[in-house]
Every structure is written in structure tokens, then in C-alpha cells.
Image 1: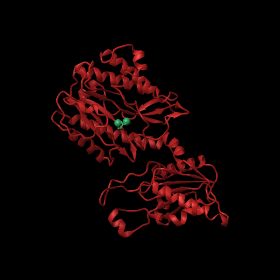
Image 2: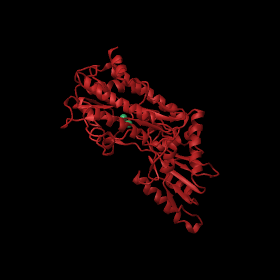
Image 3: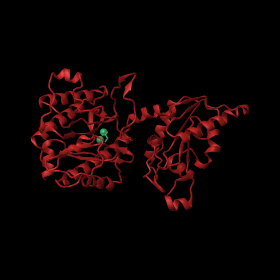
Image 4: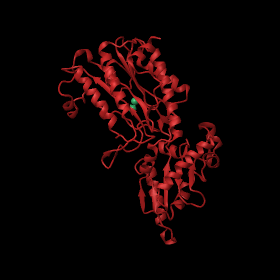
Length: 438
Ligand code: GLY
Ligand code: MN
Ligand code: MN
């Protein structure tokens, strides 16, 4: 893969920004993901470490990024697999050290097999090592070994880093605010996922199996070379009330709803969409009543995804509308403000209203700063995904039993207000019924 000049510049800007945040005399070390065995000698499809990808755009395993601000021979070094005619014939192409200099903007590059010899030298005379411990025990051990190796050479007049600082924090704060280039990719991921949902919605009919509907989504993802960002959830009827239902092996019944939480990852950026609709194309009265409540709560929550609001404001707005709806349908009884205070909605709405979205579907970034919900800023991406899940319970009108509904969209906070990146797939009762009838 070769990068466009504009992409090279984007990654370079990120590395520069990170190096500016590290103090003078520092070094950062960030390993790539490794291949993961599925069984015997076959592997899961390779997925790059998200932060490594964010900093380099390099999509091979067995690589390590090293940043040394101010290093005269070059600040960005990349260790990677060496070229190997035999291995490349079996396993696929490799960029090799020369390739990463030519195509990925590395100032300096070394074969990964030479790391034992070269990395200690890069650590010499650096005061501070930025590295995230605890993600790869074997790399942690190697790195501490190299630091100790430098320490052992103190008599030669070199010094080793005496402080290890978590690299994660700086990287996560950067990743939380999306750049224009990232937003373009995320809009594309959202668009593909909308097309996939539309295809499934059009195909849906009683008697199909949940996995057949999943196949409709996967077809569109694959058409765009965009794997699922997470395992698809396709739950008919009461299966919608199992939040992480992934068996997807039941028959879809006439008169039931189906909840689909599925979306793709495009160029390593996730989208995340949920739609819930009637298997036969027409909402029953009870389904419609609950659906309208969830939709109203979702619209109220999206409206709160405004610059300067707190992270929790969309959740509070959703909870208010949902609780009011539960009261009006007779599922809850009491006074609205007290029910909200007592979290009486929890048996029917037990999850949060969203999460950050980016290279990871549950993306990185703190939700609180100094124990307070953080303020929303331009460029933050999040999901807005309220729901109602009504299991058979005493006191709950029977006509609502076993109905599970969630509506989830992807939103970016902009100076002009919330932008719904997943607006391409219908969600009102009338729109859904019209599309399924066409
Ligand atoms: N699909 C995962 C989630 O909605 O958080
Ligand atoms: Mn989500
Ligand atoms: Mn989801």
C-alpha cells in the first residue's frame, strides 16, 4: 500500500503533535499488534493496534514505532519485518525497512529482528520513556531488559530513562478529537453501514432466520472491503432483550420486531448503528407506542450533543423522555422526578446512551476530567443509542412483554451543532413502513 502525500502529511502532523506534548529528552515506543492464532496454523484476520495505526498508517504485524524528538538522524524510526522472498510468497507482501522509509515517511528503519541490538542505543541518554505498560507482557519484559542493559553501561557515561510515563493518555486525548481526514473516513463507514441496513430492511420477511438477515448486511460490508466493526447483533422478538445477543440463529416471526445492531469498519474506522423494525413491515399498536418513546428520547439526546454541553447531557435527556414514556404507558407508576431520581427506569433501560466512536468502536478518551463529566468539543464523535427492553414482569402490561427496541446513530459534535453521520438509514415509523412496503 502506498500513501497519498496528503495522508503522509496527516500522519506526520500527528507524530509532530505527540512529540510536542512529550518533554525534551523523551522517547516514545509503540508496538504494533501481533497476528493472533485462530487454531493450529491459521490466524484471525489481522487487525492493527489502533494507536499504532493512528500514528503510522502502517498495517503490518511485528513492527515498532519509536519517536525520539530532536534525534539528528531522524525523529521517527520504524522497526518492521525484513523483506523475504520465500515468506512473501506464502504470507503476502511486506514493505521492509526500505519500503517504510519510501512509503510511510519513516526517517530511519530497521529489521525487527535487530531490535535487541538497536533499541538500547536509542534509549541511551533519554530521561523519560513514554510507553504503555500492561498490554503485551512479553514486550514489557523486553523493554525493561533494554532499559536495564543501558543502566548497566553507566560506567561508559550513558544514562537510561529514569521515568516511564504512560503513552496512552497523550494518544487517547489526541484520538478523541477527530481531524477532517478522519471525519471523511467515518462518514464513509457510516454511509456503507446505512446501505447495509437498508438492504436488510428491504429483505426482511417472516420465516427468514436471523443469520440470513445478517448475511444481507455482510454482503454490503464486503462489497466495500469493510469488515464488521463488531460482531453483528440480529435479534428477533425476545432476543432483542439480550443486549449482546450474537447467536443470530432463530427464525424471525410474523408479528415480532427485529433489532439489528451492526456496522462496518472502513479503513480501520468504526461505525455503529442499531435499527429496530417489524419483521412483517408493520408496527403493532404496542410496538409503535414504545418505538415512538425510544425515538423521541433519541432525538432529544442528539439535540444535546452540542459543543460546551457535558458528556452526560444526552444521557440525561434520553432518561427523561424514556421515564416519561414508561409512566404514560403504565409500565412505571409514580412521580416523574422521583422515578428519575430513583433510577426506576433501570429494569427497562440498563445501559448508557452512548460512547466515543473512532478507530475503536468503543473509542478511547476519558469521559470525566477531575471527577466531572467532560465538556463536548468540536470533532468528538459519539453514538446516541437509547432503548427500552421489556421482559415479562409482574405489573408490566402484557402487550409490551418481550419487546426490545434500540435506535443508534453516530454523531459528530461540530461548531454548527450535532451532525448525524448515519442519517442515511430511515428511523421513523412511517419511513420504515414505507420502505418495507416498497
Ligand atoms: N455495537 C456496540 C455498541 O452499540 O456499543
Ligand atoms: Mn454503540
Ligand atoms: Mn451498536
